[in-house]
Length: 231
Image 1: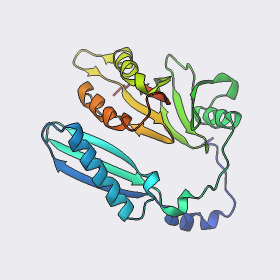
Image 2: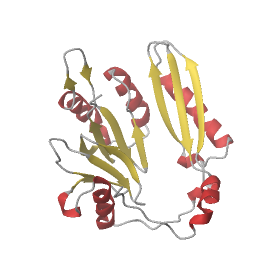
Image 3: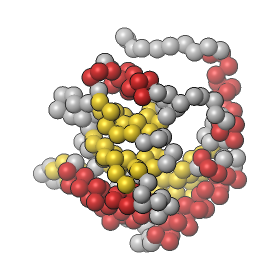
């Protein structure tokens, strides 16, 4: 099929290692009409506690919040690594290595893509291709965290996130005859990529972001990535 592949060393034991390093996932659901930031904090804390009880390292747990206005359902999905995985097994990759990984994923030469943004924990690479601007978010271990076919990345301070989110909300919206397709958001802050994809209500997105951003110092550099929805 013409696909690139590689067979790693000791491939015969990878399945067993994968089981040992499996991610811990816990879900908490509540019926909460018109949830407030306090409701979100409470369900988030409960999901983190459940993941830690299941064996996840507390500092690796990330929580994705989903709000369904039709069913008034508030869902918190916690995902964390086991203690074994918290060991520093890999050195940090250089910018050149990260660029090569992004180029391979985009099926382009490294000199064809550009570094959009970078923090001490993440790189964002992108390029113009067939009228779109695909972007890739990579962490400093060389893992591709987010792949989107058409988006924009902005480096800013945490205290300024509202203005950037508002600007990208209009800039990357797609207007059709019967609908408006709003962008998905990802925020790289500290060592985490926070996923705010899937919501079409601007007020709910801002409320979810507010809960997360309260824990971040306003002067800290963050990366906001917005991606167009075409479906």
